[in-house]
Length: 122
Image 1 (cartoon, one colour):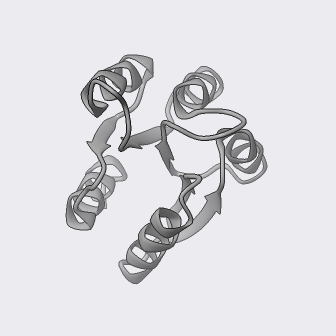
Image 2 (cartoon, one colour):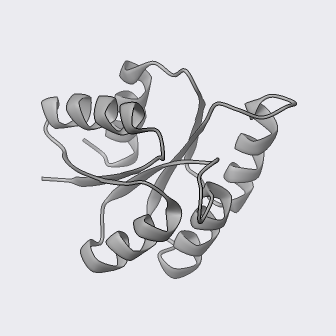
Image 3 (cartoon, one colour):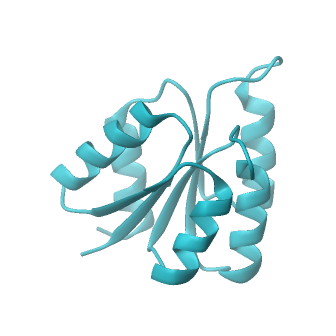
């Protein structure tokens, strides 16, 4: 069973993603920020990580950079909702840092699942 880590400080987003991804056969863990997410990944080596960009303690862009530095093959999906000039700019930076796919919030769960299936070859 492929394992996914969801890193987001919004509880409802984590819960919604976890329920949906578990319902289609993935094992899912959650982290409230990048600091906890990095620690969890080093202990458990997930197959894919979904990370928000705006979070306390360690934000998503820094998290993506560190993950790709230490785990270059890791699949990463970046999500974000807020930013004064819109999420596109931050999502472009996330792609430059190594995110495989990016989605602005609100996103469609179906699109996230399709992206995960493609990235993990399911």
